[in-house]
Image (cartoon, rainbow over all chains, first blue to last red):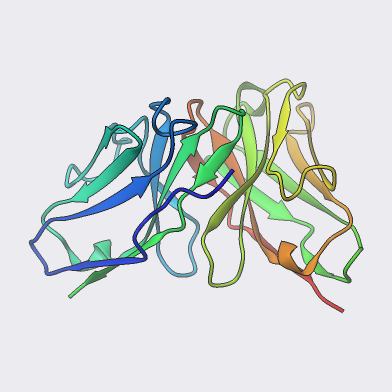
Length: 110
Length: 118
């Protein structure tokens, strides 16, 4: 199972919006809505930000939103803040009952 | 407080074995799927293995299948990962993770470092 494809890096200025893409195949993202997103700050464990494509856990800012079209899922962060600077990973369930992560995207807030 | 605490990491020679443990608290362990996810130094996350809440169904990433075995003891509220025939590329922080279902990794441990080197 190959990793999902994410851009290595994205950047934006405070207050702006950015979108991180996550491309899979018909064996994972294209078939299942079991797509989740995680934020990881250096030295910390990942934190769940979005689940089932577009749902936010309690306590996660509504500046974070998710969507999916075909084999590609997306995470959008609006009103960028300095604290959003981190690595972001997508994940999907697969048709062989495994899970797969994206390679990760480093978000830089300029 | 919901908590996962990993232990058992360390330095091991190539070809060696190691058993990781994960103790849980603050929730009913037997109700949840559990996973191991690893992260090599400076690299991204990689899913390793998961186990059904009753322990009867397991899955593995292709790179560890046949070498790693996941198990759990619901009575002791413990998750395990037996790692055999370790390779340098298995060097990583190993996280114990709770799954709410539908690929929702909501609780992560702090991780335990495994280093495979001679």
